[in-house]
Length: 228
Image (cartoon, rainbow, N blue to C red; front, side, top):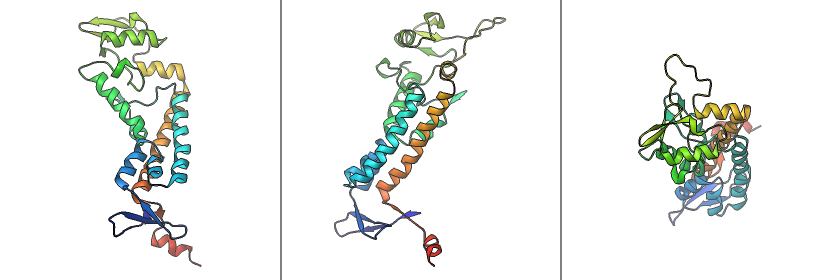
């Protein structure tokens, strides 16, 4: 399935509708594709294809938000740490409004600052055992997360260390990392929320393609097969 484009004299690009053969003016396809990646359907609206843009927006934005709600806002984050590689984020990143803040939060928390932007837990990746964080962020987590208390942090100047490994011979029955806490608290809803946000992100790749190249057309072989 391919989009059919034709240049016009003004340098703009038009696509051919697969339904009636009419032309569709793809205004600023690169910009439109970026806007549709940022927010599903926004690029089509800018191109003047308002009905299609609103249709995409109405289908994908609620799907993504439903996944966030089911996962208590925890299911979209970027993490490439050993033992916590968030492969689901590759699919979720199909929606830029989610990908950009998640990547910023990951960079801030795992970088020199050791705390997410604005000390917000929104889209911040979960802490792993022994991970150092700023004292300010440790205080935020103690207040915001009912499953984390002050005893979960050990001073590691100038940082606070989250649930350091227990001494030899001692058994720590608490979840080893923050993502385990989320799984324990949310149960199956963590995975269901992850699935919803992944589906929204993957489907938005097609929306981005539509903004860039126009509607998809059947290949010549498909058209031949439809002939009586």
